[in-house]
Image (tube, rainbow, N blue to C red; front, side, top):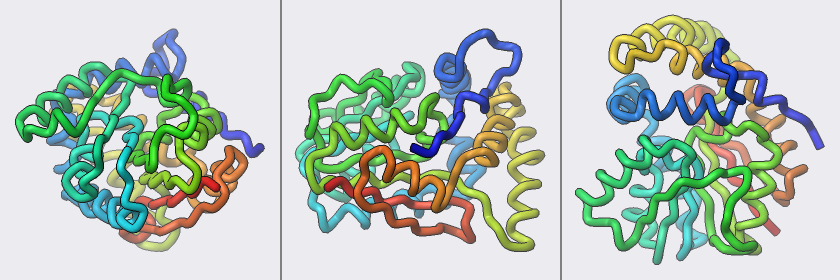
Length: 248
């Protein structure tokens, strides 16, 4: 199986915790400002990307959906509204992010359709073949063990199920590549520090995107983890990618 040492990319170099513990701390630190910064810094393009992922699941007509690394629940909420499933379960390792998500869900009166709970994507409590579909919005990059997390997705998906995975990637053509790199390396961490008081969290974003095995490399890892077929759709000049991963 292709190996990806995701634990090498960590938010806080001076912390003694492993990657997973640092990711929990990072998202707990920025939870209160996460939605504002996420949408503002992406110019709301992230909403367009999520809608593309939802469209890819429509023909499947999933009744049960698992949203991994759900954060404040944006993907879970969109799935509930657009796909009309019987239930959406969202899991995340950050309690503070989940608290923000639960508050949003209650305001939208979706608590009978969406359940958010603390859960580790690399060791999920769910039975085999539990969900028709899985969504992941910019979360696989944060896995401590990417291969294990993908294998868990295969395990909990029902036969013929689909995982729609959104993740940042690196543009490869001038001048988008240069502009993207400058923005992510210099502008985004500066703005993130002003509003969230956590410079490292947003500088980590740049490092983790740079080192993530996007495109065909990710597809190969997903297939090695057990997915039968993986299609790749580049989004917005290659800034992000949508991976549609099918289980046999």
